[in-house]
Amino acid sequence: MTKKEFKSESKRLLDLMINSIYTNKDIFLRELISNASDALDKLYYRSLTDDNVKVDKESLVIQLAFDKENRTITLTDTGCGMTKEELETNLGTIAKSGSLGFKENLNKDDKINIIGQFGVGFYSAFMVSDKVTVTSKSVDSDEAYTWESEGADGYTITKAKKKNNGTEIVLHIKEDTEEADFSKYLDEYELKSLVKKYSDYISFPIKMECVHRELKDEKKHEYEEHKENETLNSMVPIWKKDKNDITDSDYENFYMDKFNDFDKPLKVINYSVEGMCTYKSLLFIPSHAPYDFYTQDYEKGLSLYTSGVMIMEKCAELLPDYFSFVKGVVDTEDLSLNISREILQESHSLKLIAKNIESKIRKELETMLKDNRETYESFFKTFGVQLKYGVYNNFGADKDKLKDLIMFYSAKEKKLITLKEYVDNMKDGQDKIYYAAGSSVAKIDLLPQVEQVKDKDYDILYLTDYVDQFAITAIQDYDGKKFANVESDNLDLDSDEEKEAIKKVNEDNSELLLAMKDEIKDVCEVKFTNKLKNHPVCLTSKGDVSIEMQKVFDAMPNNMGIKAETILEINEKHDISKKLKSLFESDKDEFVKYTKILYAEARMIAGLPIDNPTEISTLICDVISK
Image 1 (cartoon, helix red, strand yellow):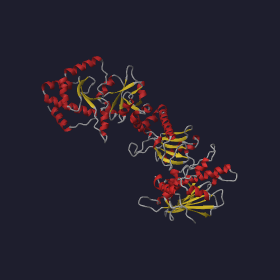
Image 2 (cartoon, helix red, strand yellow):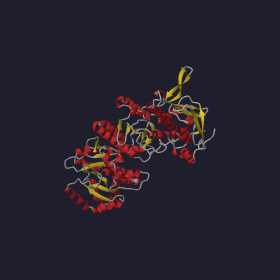
Image 3 (tube, helix red, strand yellow):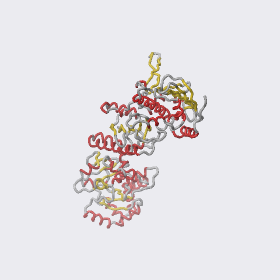
Image 4 (cartoon, helix red, strand yellow):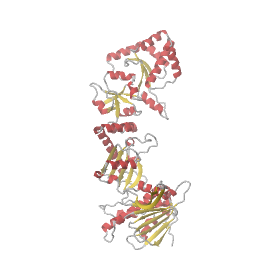
């Protein structure tokens, strides 16, 4: 028996594969099963095109076995097998793919599911094995041969005894190290899990003798064990079945099992696309957000399959961030895969699939909003923040796709409404969409600035999510109607006469207002207003940063010190304005106390912190005790 060496470039490639190309050791079984599936497919194709090859389809199986004591895993198929020359060519030369050669020789109209392309998947076995033994008998030969290798040092090929055609691969599993637990692959549960995860939809049965325990004597707690040759894979995925044969229960069970959810999905989207890019997709909108959905630990993505093999568990490229809550699978053969089938190369097909999926999800949500309002509102209460995030993310690039899906609480309707519904119900002569922001509907409803807008019988959108104002800012206008923050200093709801009257009041009291401004360094202006009805004071803002936006910035760990430009407005009709004018003329010390107390009150109403609560408390006690 003469040991043959791999070619020098093959040695380097083998070392690269074991240490670099494959980043996940678990996929070795996926690769070997895929190769076995190819061998079965080739034989079945031969049986259809070659009268000399007779095959019973029931005999086309993949058998898996393990031996803890001898640290081996054995994978056997009943496929076409390999001759001595094919063993030499396909296994002795790394990156020489027999499957690819077979595929290239097919007619364009031939329908056969060949997975292998690069001829490197077999060598992933060396990530977990210190020796690999392959015994194979070709359907075209009466002789069998064994190929054996311990890695880059080379390989041997010897004659062997094998009755039936097919291939048997024996992996001698490495001993455990501090960095890697190889013994886990010698466990029944682990092997079954790997098959289920990566190869569940291989079209041939993958069988393994599994141990089953049955209760023999309940009183003595005695069990009887027996082995059963169990089929580990489903073979036909649910998304490839006829829709008429799939029940709601089938969808629900698949979703809950696949995505580890205890609740049924809110919406199921099962569809296929044929054309420039052909794929099948089964998508689910969950009924609730995962516990880590709004954390950095959450990973978006759809499970990506090709030819029944899972390529990626979570392919993030298939979903935009604003639809990151969607779960599901995509199955296609139209992708360019890299050599390890672990990550995707830049692919026009992938981008096309992602674009189609985004459009499909959006249309399904639009239909749900139109035809099933109650379900949509349930969805929106769970994932609406993510849609709003998508509106302003990327500088508002996707706002037009999402603006008709977002909703806000209506002060007039007392429920969630869309922007379209707000505009459709605007009063004659109304040219703005009014909104107010705060931490809750109840708190916004008490804002002093809300009174004036309600008096005009205009509806107000209540923005209670931290992303809301950023989304509104990104949209800018809807159907030609600009957005107006009721807390802005330039709301412009007064008549010309009212504007002139309040302008004169501020001019006549300019010294008083400047004196108040000197005591309050945080505001850019102090002025009298006629917009307030019952409240004595309020804080308004001007510029692009509102008070609610400032709160969001303040809560960020990398706060850049972005502040709103605030204005203290005093109700000119309230008794407090008379008191201020009187104190300014008669008692400057009391005037300063009132100024500080009124500013603290305005900050509290706006939900902003008071920097000196002890001082303010003392001032209030001093004032009310007189």
